[in-house]
Structures are given as structure tokens and as C-alpha cells.
Image 1 (cartoon, chains in turn blue, cyan):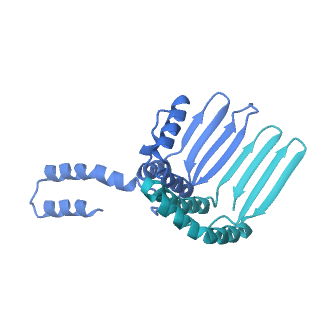
Image 2: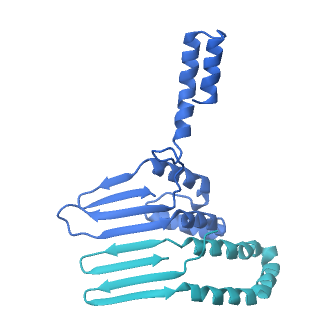
Image 3: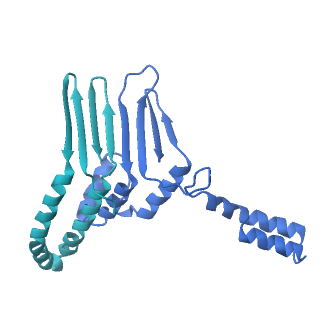
Length: 142
Length: 92
């Protein structure tokens, strides 16, 4: 039970607020509690130590395609993001142009470590499975 | 900072040919470190000369950033398998 919940129940016990008000306040702090538990924790409640970003590509049933298994340390991606701050402006423009030619509209100067942290936390709670016609792609962190 | 990778494992096979290498990176790092220490006076001079043009900062900070990237390579694994081709790279 969180401090906020306890405080609301205390106020209810002391008859400072009505049952309806207590219910409304409890429902307001519920989303807050949900976001707290959304951090990278395993089923036992311990904080998981996420180290690797994994991409696994497997051929679909009956298909004889390529099998790819990549394990990238999260520390390496972080170090890479920090390295992008040293890219000179004209080089960033060239990179952006090359990405645009490939159909990716993205500015490498907007790459932030905090954004990546959010992505890692999101991936710690879910795994991305993409099943195409010939192959199956599995993206997750461990 | 992580410890740098000590061994690079390369395994490339194509049909009947196979190249399997265990490259001892732990022997290379001391040589690289000695080389960089010897270069420090030159790097400092280059930073001082290039500072007014805006490139000095880049040169000064790129060293530690590249070093942290190299250290973070520890644990990287790439394994690609095709019908008769296999490529495996691992930093241990």
C-alpha cells in the first residue's frame, strides 16, 4: 500500500472525507501506481538488470530463409548515442539525407539517451513479434 | 565503464571453407594504450591549434567516447546463418 493510499484511508477513518470522496481519490492515484510498476521489474518485483537488445529473425514454417540472431549490449547503444553528439553539423545533414533517401525521415541530432531509455523500459515489459510471409522477427531486451 | 572485450571470436563458413578465429584482443589493448599515451603531446597540440576553429572540442572528446564504445562492445554477438553460409562474430 502506498503512502497516498494510507493517507486517504486515514482521512476516511478520521471522517475528514466521505466514502465517495475517498473512492474518487483512490481512483485518481491508481494510474500513478500503474506507471510506477511499469518500470523494468520481473514477476517477483525485483528490478531487472537489462543488458542486451536482441533481434532474432527465423524463417517461417517450411521456408528456407536466413536465420539471424543479434545480441547488442545496451551499453553499446548508449555509447553510440553519446557519440552522435560529436558528429559535426554538416555530417549530420549528410546522414539525414542518406536516411531520407532510404525512406526514413529522421534527424540524428534529435537522438537522445532519455528516448532510448524509454524504449528499453517499454521493451522490458513487452516483446515485439512480427510474422511476415517468409520470416518471423522477434525483438526484445534481456 | 565496462571492461573492454578480451577475445574476438570470428567464425565464417561458406560451403566447405571455414575460417574460425579467436583473436586475443587483450594483447592488443596494451599496445593501443601505449601508442595513445605516446601520442598525447601531439593530441594536446592539435586540440590547441584546432580549438578556435571548433574542431578542438571534437578531437578532445572523441577519444573518451570512442574508448567507451570499444569497452561497450563486450557481449556483442552477431550470428547470421543461411543455407550454406554461416557468419558468427562475438566479442567476449
